[in-house]
Image (cartoon, rainbow, N blue to C red; front, side):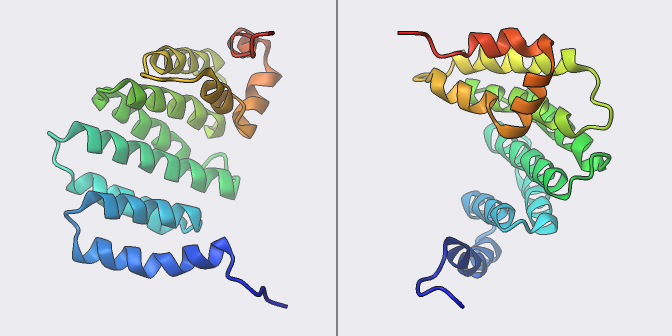
Length: 190
């Protein structure tokens, strides 16, 4: 009952030992460790994806703001992934994801990083216990859009993609408070 060709998941599983070896033998090469953490996330290896980014963050010197910003964002998304997959809305990792994104925002220097941090804070609020402060989510999305507009070569289709992420779109569609941000993202009629 197998497949005649390896599936993408097969290739991903085969990739892990090589990525682990690269990260172990060359820990100073941060890209290898970022890729390993992302491979764990694609494999839904929740403990290892979070541990990899926590370790990476601890090993990046504090004066290297851009790599720390990215590590914090990857850590936040790993926590979000864990909470979303397990559907445990009172998991403390939802609050920790927000805090990681907030720390990333404080360090971020590039418009892209500022945009991603604000968006991540808004997205993480979906999973927070009693995220009731929807106005805070709206502020994060408004700030995300402001930073998005500063990204060189930005494309509004990308902004629409981010707003239409399944879980976020469900929250935004459910509350009239978010209608202005959704309306502003509508494709212009030709």
